[in-house]
Length: 226
Image 1 (cartoon, helix red, strand yellow):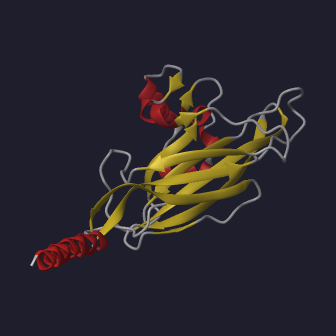
Image 2: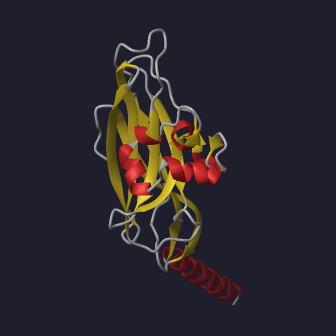
Image 3: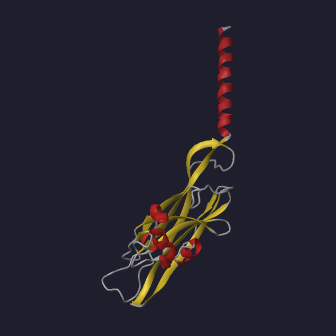
């Protein structure tokens, strides 16, 4: 009789264990954001105007929706969104066009005072320096699925974009922008990420889902953590 109860108890334990495992299989890990990595090595200043000084490279990383409309800037060099004697807002023509930012708008934000426009203070960084074509730098940012106002975006297709630029300058009165832009895509319904095509100086622009906790399988979900 004891043996019988022992086997009945064992059977009940196995039933509970298998039930728990079955429930686990119904749970997926839901992404809480996207981690984007940008690796670049320029463009590097070209020209004869500067001697003993090498202008630094500007860059921006931002998000666009499925209609290629601007959503949010994730990282940008301070000189681009600063008010002062040497604003570089026109150094990133694609980002400038997409975001709708002009020098006049930056002036409004700062109250006509030198400094970084307040709406970009949390996402600025120093302009990187590339002494040679062999020197590269990597920047990592995260997107938490919100727009520039902090509102959650709807599931769909989005693009993570990067632009990097420098100048060619041979005389004091003029310069030419050297700008490169590329983008990868994010499908928040299928949980798929397609990396961007490299350019001459954007070596890599990739993304991966950030997974922090397991949630029930409703809405977005991926089966394996990164």
